[in-house]
Amino acid sequence: MSQIPTRVAPGVHRIGDDIVNFYLVEAEDCLVMVDAGLPSHSRRLLDALAHLEDRLCAVVLTHAHPDHVGLAETVRARTGAQVWVHEADAQALDEGQPGVMHHLQPECRVLPYLMRRPSALRPMMLRGFAGALMSPMVREYRSFGHDQILREVPGRPRVLSVPGHTPGSTVVVFDDRAVAFTGDALVTYDCSTGHRGPCVVSRAFTQDSEQALESLEQVAELPDETLMLPGHGAPFAEKPRIAVLRARATGVR
Ligand SMILES: [Zn+2]
Picture: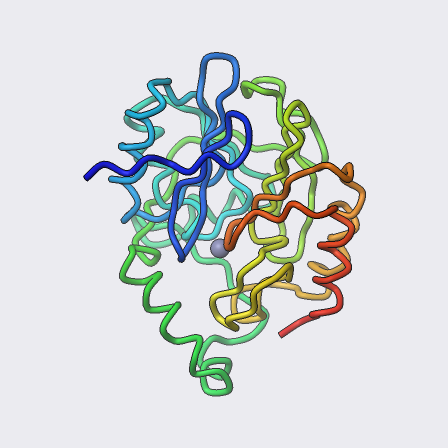
């Protein structure tokens, strides 16, 4: 049975599942994909593209972790859509095992983390089964720097630099429809801790948690009416600065 993507804002559709979100934005007779899910999401993406009947023009990545890059190379090769990533994360896309993207190292080693928090094992295994360890490297991409407007991408999204989760973590803002894709800089569900509500991602998957909390200042400055669409968890419709207050109160785990 084909799966219809969930409309979360005017012209914005969520694909994905409990593991990870990615999104399609209708802009200028094109579709812009924000993040690229996991290799196992290809059926869902094909269904969504068939349902929306538009061609895919660009893929903007919030960061270069494999659960957000999974289908980027596949759609680039098939549709010619340009893939965009922050220059500080670009290396992770093309370094690594032949054909498989490089995995950025978190600040906390995974094994000791799992010994303290065994409940994190299941979500990690689910990501693995969904193809996270086999996300293909991206053979061609464009990179962007700090805080600029991507004028060549339909809808002209604004990219805000929020380093911490990864050095090139980015919030992608479409001002015309007041939505901000926060990637893993701010999520509303952290599957490794089970925490629901705005937070930064656990240390087992984050490179610099203190920096991640500091970077949330960029999110706090977004207009009050902005709908936040995270890489993991449900949309957050309260004011961005409320989300940031809650994330800082939750702190680092
Ligand atoms: Zn993620």
